[in-house]
Amino acid sequence: MALPAIAPYSVPRQEELPANRVDWRPAADRAVLLVHDMERHFVNAFTPGREPLTEVVANIRTLRASAHAAGVPVVYCAQPSGRPGATPVRCAELAPDRSRRRQVTSTKAPAETGRSRSRARSAGAPARPAAS
Image 1 (spheres, rainbow, N blue to C red):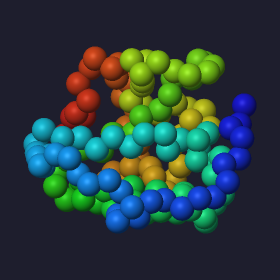
Image 2 (cartoon, rainbow, N blue to C red):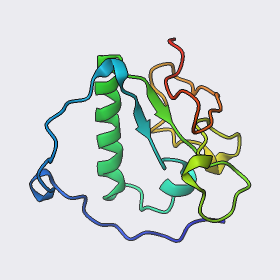
Image 3 (tube, helix red, strand yellow):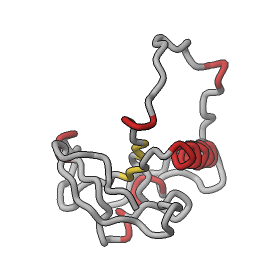
């Protein structure tokens, strides 16, 4: 079942965001970039070519390029199929499903290898994938 359409809206600009409350910086050797809720099922609810989708996609591309340059792995998560309604956080699955609506959209798919990795991981399993 498709999600209802979401009307276009503007993504907050840097000056509109609250001030950062922490002074630490992530360590590349201990970090992972998690791309969440970018499956077709979710993305298709937004108007193509309009905010927030255009800004979010651009930001994900920037983050992904920065992560790749820093040697930080990029992980794409997908909701487990066959579970209607809200999915508990602990049931997250870090692997794409074969169904089209659960695929990460092509503009957000892994660019480093040109293909997605199909490794299922439970919430308790290590999030860092093996080196390519």
